[in-house]
Image 1 (cartoon, rainbow, N blue to C red):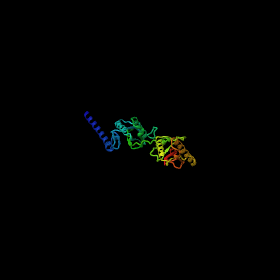
Image 2: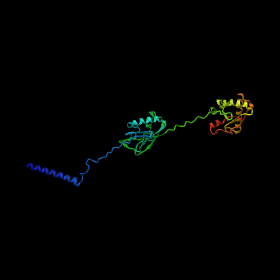
Image 3: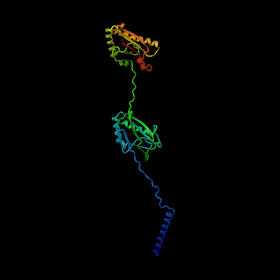
Image 4: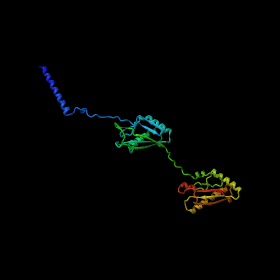
Length: 303
């Protein structure tokens, strides 16, 4: 009797299971559904290698790259340290090469720095590192670039820095304006038949003595002693300050002052002819102080 009851219980359970299966799988069609929920496909993001290239002169490549936290500006350089060390050695050996550091940033990032954008902030950090390793600030320029193609992995940006190269052009240092002494020293004696200019210190009637004009005077003195028909011509010139009449008078006065000094050096006064031309024959533009200074002179020549 007990065996018969057990059999009926087994048949009942089998019928319940079969009914449940038929209802769920055949009627509801739920047996093929993923009861564990959707499967999330996780594809591994490949880190772009860092490549630093300066034509055929330099090629550095790493398996890793810089990394920055999202919205961050401090670079992790562990994966590219060897390449950065090689880069500093290259720049040290090639001081004529200018390096441009470009920092990238995304419009999806938030800039909480004092920089105009995160790209410039990131590039500045790399510049500071290079400068701290002996690269002159003047050899490092900075740029930033917005890119929404940046790849973030778990809120970490891989890459974000690019290097490019160019020739360094040293800034042109403005040449100091020539003084009257500089102008006097520029005069080179060739012969007594080629005019040589004399210059004067500010507010002085005595011309500036140089080895070149001393040689001219010495040779002219000897030549005039042997050639009685020749004269030493002194021509005064001015800039265009004041009136033409005043400048004509001033130029004549300067020429006469030089004549007096030459007489004291032993040249007979009747062998010296003076004239003033004022502002009529400038040797430089009167538009600049330097040009004006060059025009205030007395030209000497034997004829």
